Length: 115
Length: 111
Image (cartoon, rainbow over all chains, first blue to last red; front, top):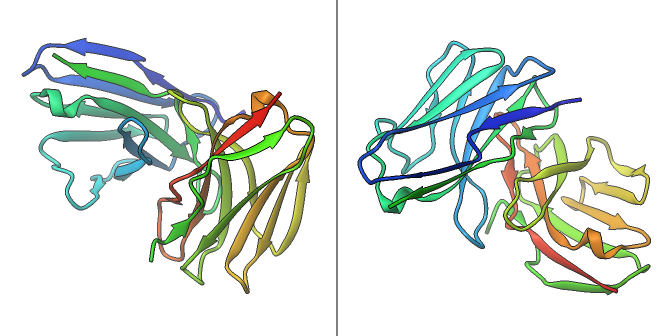
C-alpha cells in the first residue's frame, strides 16, 4: 500500500521551456503533498507544502512564480517549472501523506535536465 | 545547531554484522520519527516509523526512540550488501506539516 506515482521519470529539454511534473497517490487520499529537490550528493531540500484545494506554502528562497504548484484533488498534485534554465536541472521528488503524523511516502522522482 | 543531526559516514560494516545508525534532534516537541533508505539516484523509501519511547522491531530492522535524550536510532541485523545505501532520519516537529530530514548516513556493507 501507500503508492505514490510520479511522472515523468526523466525530462530533457531546452532552456526556456516550461515543464510539468505530476504526482499521484494511487491507493490513499493525500491530504498533504510535498515537493523536494535534491542536487547530486546533497540532502533533500523541501520546496513547498500543499494541502488539497489550498495555495501551496513555499520554503524561504523558493520562487513561487517559478515553481507553480497545484494540488487540485486528494490524489493529484502538479509542479510546473516555468521557463526552466540549466540551473534548474535537478532531481525533483514529490511526497504525499494521508494525514497528521502518518509517514510521508515518496514518488520515484523526476530527473530534470535543462540544456 | 541543525534540527536533525546524523553522522554522514560512511559507516562500514562486514556482511552479517549489526549496523547501528544514530540521529539526534533539537525540537523537544517532536512527535513522530521515521527512517528512510535512499539508494544512489533513487528517491527515499520508508523503512520504519516510531512514535513512542522504546524499541520497535520489523524483520531485521529495529528502531529505538529516547525522547528524553532526543535520540533515535536504527539497528540493522544481519547486514547485507544490498543494505548499502544512505539512511535518512526524519522528524515531525510540533506544529509542522513537513518532516525535517537529517543529511543522511551512508552505510557500506562489505561482502
